[in-house]
Image (cartoon, rainbow, N blue to C red; front, top):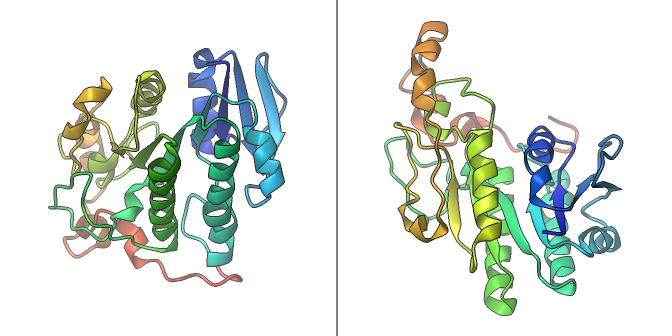
Length: 267
């Protein structure tokens, strides 16, 4: 690609992908509402509030592909989620439509299905069971992306990210872990595919204890390489397993199922 846009580039995952995806495009355009720092060679830095339609239009202009990690990434009061995840996503898709419809990778979430029990095996067509307002915003994002595909042909990979961390840090992550290397290889596969459409992709590594079925993606020429199982012995030695009635052992969304509906003056 000539120019790859990464939104949410100041965040933990955006910072990692900034390094890993540098060879993928002549120019990385890094955008966030927060401070990113100085541009490196072959980078462009943009401060952008996703709720500002004009700023988003300028951010998207000239880009060949978009990795959309921006917006609120945890449970927050509705007004905070509204700007980045609802209004902001609409602004992103309108900007993409105005600028040649570059292919988008949308960072959806396992919290779209968080109230499923951990003994359920899920395919891409399962009914949504969001575990909070954040999860609801990602359900909206998937629906918006699907509408733009059906109506205009805008291609998007809907990646329901599990736990994209350097290593699993608890027993639930033995099922949800998505290694950063596997995510980077998925991004490469999505952008090199001749035709994408608007597929749901479970963002998880090849975990022995995994809950999600990606067998519908044979055509994508992507297979995760890492497996959280290699961390099980260490976690067993360092942590007590949660009780069977603990949400961390009951629900695929873990603690998100127990969070309250936060008000604007609460966290």
